[in-house]
Length: 281
Ligand SMILES: [Zn+2]
Image (cartoon, rainbow, N blue to C red; front, side):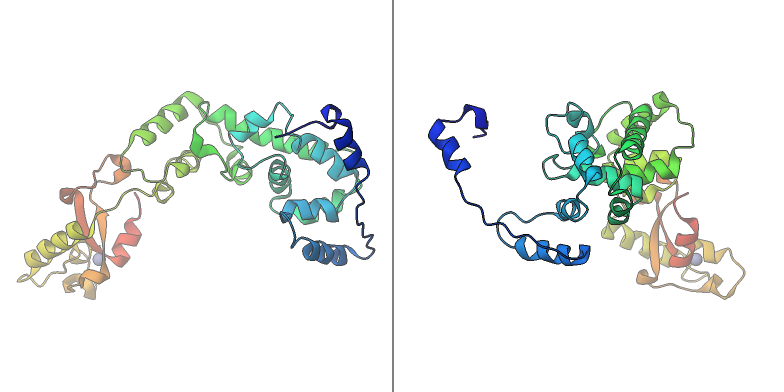
């Protein structure tokens, strides 16, 4: 039931104007003021971290920052919401902008810029990050919201991407039933589609692993060869070693990234060392 003061009944206006407020004026160092806020923060809706920082570092910089990033009437909010989680009222866009420009050292940045009379750097950096994201990923997906775009911008903004190719790859990965973590799709593509850990590709189930382990082990039983096919072709002491099930990990014979399915005929058990060395090629 949001109402504007100007539209309220006279008696209600008067009630607000005549309400006596208990006001504490506290003096002290910044850390003492912070302590104060912690104490009074117990009642009502607690202030979040950014709200506390705004209070501690109050000044022209915070005022301008709030005007831009904490104004729910700002027409950009909807655009920003595609990439950033939270609400303007609770300072979450300001927090994100500060987090990006300060590389995670928000308090330090606010302290250094406390008496600045402009927020040019903050705004410019924030816009650079979002312009960059939206130029590479032309379709907005709900999983983009709340990702670490500031870090990704720092790590990848000097590389060149082809938005049409990127879009095709996003669509391919979104349609892939083996990709369990869609949030990882964007960083995966930015990194050159190498680090499949980001996608949390569905792995072989326990039953598949056990049956493949049993078959591999039975096959080498009389040959004094290792049940790890890579150890077996090696030249060290492990070439005839029979690893226990718990000493082995499942591996995609044809890598998932090259189209290998997560079916038992594409599963082989490798000793942990070899599995790690093979990685996600
Ligand atoms: Zn091995």
